[in-house]
Length: 242
Ligand code: ADP
Ligand code: MG
Image 1 (cartoon, rainbow, N blue to C red):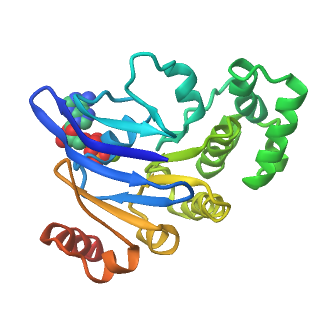
Image 2 (cartoon, rainbow, N blue to C red):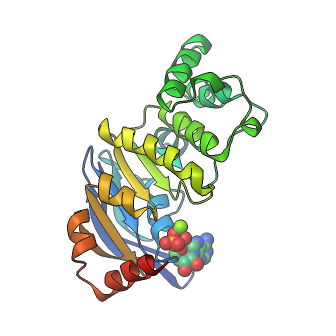
């Protein structure tokens, strides 16, 4: 589904992604971890071309993401992306936030978009909040709306960049729960997160990044019990001391 081949990216003279080669299969859940500044956000943002790369290739569903003929707005609207900040439109209701892209990009009828929004809100446990405004919701609820909004475009894969990092601790669980249910339903997912219990339970594979390199890729049991590199050992032991 997502295919990185010898991907390199520089910010000026800083080598942010160093020869990354990796694949995400259909239905697979990847957790990307690694120290701050290791290139996790950069990597995930290259998938929908929020960041350009200087060489290598990235394919998404067989399409070359960096092709000059790709309709980038259309492409981006179909890749579900959930960030740390929710970025909901404050002047639109929860349902309207979810209906916006399906109506403007997919040209869905308002009644169809509303029906779909209701289904998705049900799915993320917020059926009663359709007519609320984002400012009336907790952070965890807003992030679940952001997930519903992404799902409204029927994305073939979902990308998450630290979706729970800005939340108060008591709200982390409800967002992870929604992500778990997506994973169970077979969604292809690439998740940058520090939630190592989530990685253990849900990930098919863990990618460990350091210094722009994809240092390790393995199943969670192996990664957590028997990390291969010194860098991964140090990362895990630092996490445990925190
Ligand atoms: P992570 O998500 O793992 O914390 P990032 O991908 O955000 O790491 O950043 C990787 C490295 O690239 C960091 O050293 C960061 O300072 C640098 N970087 C990120 N974005 C930019 C940018 N827009 N311009 C210059 N350097 C950047
Ligand atoms: Mg980051």
